[in-house]
Length: 469
Image 1: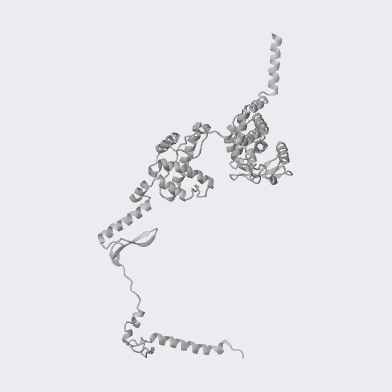
Image 2 (image 1 turned 135 degrees about the horizontal axis):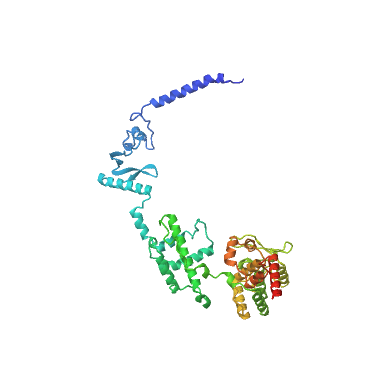
């Protein structure tokens, strides 16, 4: 037998009517009178649930359980002022939203003063006017506090990106000198005069570095001025972060002129060798038995790689079929390869015959580790002194590569790709750009300043003058 909706609807109506009757009976039921609760005998025979029992006379009644706790009401005592719980609160708007602010007093006179203060703060924030209290706190903020907050934030960039560990370490060294001299100066009161005084203090050796400097480095006053500019730049970064955080209104050192001009900066092109001096350096290193350093010097001069880019190369990175050397560029460089010229291919073949490790330039103490960079610099400097040629640094060999490419007719844009320079041709022209006087003289002699017809006419005129005489 199949049941239909019509067949079960009477049963449902009966059930629903009974449920409604029970519900209405429960709502109309009154609280039971005292003594109406059934008593439950305890172990000793006395009733426990009976409210009339003297032992349970403190139990709450039905009406007491059903009542909700009363909350304190707001009593209006004036314009936007209300009293509640013995304190006066003010009705204000913060960021467009109505809220309550406690006046922390019960005196209406003092409450009106607090309401006036709240409205003044709102007006100042809306109009961009600085409050007196904030100005006083800003004047008390010292350079040492600004630097400490900057270091605690891990020295972020202007775009709030993390810096490399080596960069952070350099900034901490520079800011240590800044705090030693300008730590007690209020950050908002910094002026260019403070920067000039700091420069004079640093040039007078007011701060002794823990790192030992050579005699040549001590004579170079331009390097000390450049270091001062870098340290003041670190301080400017810390002040910029304080402005971003709202601790300062503006960077007081913004727009400061540097102490080192571009013409006084020595670049790597000043430490680049000539083809003749490079041959003398290689010859001196070969005679001293430093074949690895000689190979490294020629390799960097023929590829234009940086020191650390060449140190970690292995024989797996050399592609003989493609005539390329795969390189992991530093500083986010482009073109992760170096072109294998005929001279470089001959050098690599000679190096492979003397190879004793999977690295191109292994350490003499551990063949699984690359050559130490300080060892390369020291051996190269010693070879320059022995050969009697000007000083050459490893980065100067990179400038030598750029110079030879320029003399071959390549443009700065093409050279920037060959050396993996991400900044493009502008930096190549400013830092690496150099052309030897011999090459300029050679190219100038190839230039024809007069056309062929003009030169023939001038020759004929000279011949007629000779005949007439």
